[in-house]
Amino acid sequence: MSALVLVTGPASEPVSAAEVRAHAQIDLIAQEPAPGVITTALASPAIAGNVDNGAHRYLATFVTADGETQAGTVSVAVTVADKTVNGKIELTAIPLGGALVTSRKLYRTAANGTTYLLLATIANNTATTYTDNIADTSLGAGAPSTNTTTDPLLAMLIAAARGAAETITRRALITQTWDLVLDCFPYWEMSIPLPTLQSVTTITYIDANGATQTLAADQYLVDTKSEPARITPAYGLVWPSTRYQTNAVTVRFVAGYGTASAVPQAIKNWMLIRIKQMYGQREAVNVGGVVVEFPRAFVDGLLDPHRALGFV
Image (cartoon, rainbow, N blue to C red):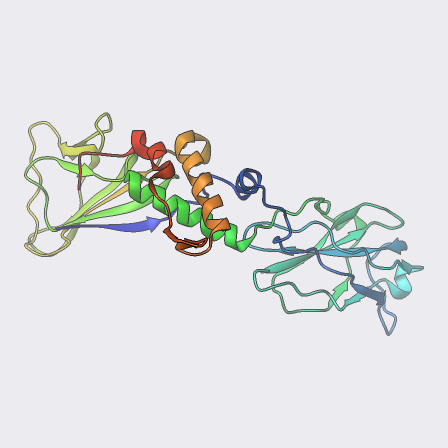
């Protein structure tokens, strides 16, 4: 018996949300909206601080797992006349985001400036107050001008389409790490599923005494010219003996075309078509006077040249 266990999934997707929106002609209304205005005032009671003398304005952005919104509504100006007397500014009513917001970023102008620079990151979606005690020289990068957050439905559909493409082609698309778990070593060669194989990380096994051993890399050969890739003992060697038990051998390997740019365009086209279809048709059937089953054969031929054959 054998099993495949995902160790590390892909860090990105073959197609981006922007590509899906362009292909499906989806507008941006489903993105996380930018925050509203922050309430600002000099600290009370007055206290010395580091905020430079001059007028300062503030704004916020929302951060999700996918990106950051554009700059929010600008606050009214707060003027520090003498920071040795009152050099801190209190921010209140900091806007809270939706359920997908994981943090918020605060931006501020330098004294009498017009460019909004990073002041602080609030690493939650609950706090509504912040005390600014930061000098102009410690401000960071500028506020974003575009919204890079993603419609959560699109993110879900992209992942679902990639999973379907991987199932149909029996491939890994974006780089990912898997464990192939076997009850014992084969007689000679073992096939490594989910091409394209990038590398074999380790081969471990449980020896006759029950101890876990790591097979040295010079004890086996990896054939990446074949598809699926094969692993055999090195010349003149045989596989070591294992304890007679389930899951005695584990082959950890890295598979996938690589980054999104390396994934064949036909696969990405298939994903775009399927995602658009799923986005526009939320049910498994299309009811238009007649109940029609969700179509499949329509575009699946795009995947035919990339189907991995030769293993179960």
